[in-house]
Length: 492
Ligand SMILES: Cc1ncc(COP(=O)(O)O)c(C=O)c1O
Image (cartoon, rainbow, N blue to C red; front, side, top):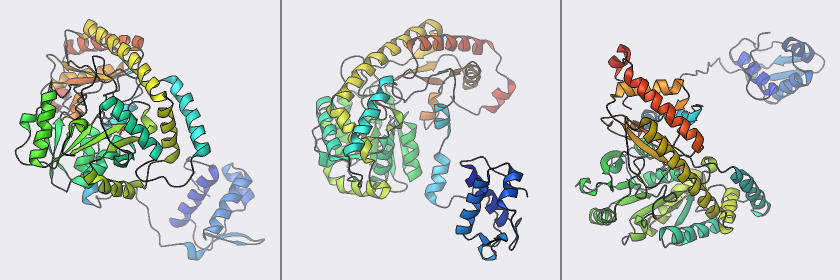
């Protein structure tokens, strides 16, 4: 009998799938007697127990009828008319799906895993090896006393208290646990903000360039994004549109990805614009934890007199990526709507992780981790900058920044086609480069890269920059092939 085991999961489950497929496709017709468990086991080189388990499951599901002593027969009533399940994707079933498909760009997740020797990935926190052990201990401790009942939709009270304390100490934000909602990372905060605040086809403002994950979530929701440029002082507030946008998304502490800091004057101007135009501001306070010169300016939320700033923070970018815990400080007038949106989304975030994090914060673990991470990141940043200037200085303009976990470089005298050649060359040699163009709505007129330094040691960063310099030299010498010249596919 021809049965194809697909290799996924336990063997008995593979056998069940193979038999069901044969039945549904009509290759095993109603009334057919199946081989005995011994014979099928021999034929497929499986244990008899495996075949018996599969037959028993198919009997329970009504596919087989077992006659004691005479074997297993395909049950006629179990067979629906043959339906061939197609693997091809059907046309989008909703407007959301259509937009989501258009905006979903797998390159982000693929870049995360590109497996190169020197991957200059950005957006990930520094891996502190002892964090795994500490976190394991916290989880075990938390699971021993955290009730397994559903958690409050807004999040565990103990964690919300710690977050309030943390925000007051570090960001000058005065709030209460009532106005905090624990979410599954900043990404969920963006999705909830879209649900609560934005209707399809309404205009929102995003910085240009911007964080691509937020952009995708918002346009999939149906928002029309109006890009507003940034310069060395962050968002150019004077270029905000005269018509009232619903929402303005900003990264004031460390503009993503350029690293500029929104100046004090522009902070005040932005708040003034929002109150005059009656719109909301979403402040994504990413990278405020990693300042290398001075301290981050006060958060917009701490200056907000009109309760118009929705403040978003995340632990995924300071502890570890898979943690998926973030938080929103919501204006009181929006609290109820955000809680309902969170409830409909997933009831609540997971309890044990929240309890573990609350303990970790209360015992000073987070502050210790941040101190250590800042020291290591600073030394990696210096190594990268030193080697970048040394090996690639003549080819790049380095954007000035004082915070964050990456550096932005623009290429001098490189066309987009030549930069594509550079990217291929670097990839062949084990250097993972990440074009900045992904974060622009309108592609920039020259190529640039975001060089993440949190995942590589100083020595590895030195080697990576040496390789970068070699690739730049070679790409500049080479003739750009006709194919690439003609394609002009990617702006980097
Ligand atoms: C500016 C910015 N906001 C949000 C996020 C995502 O945060 P989270 O992992 O908590 O969803 C990132 C990730 O790189 C980011 O760069």
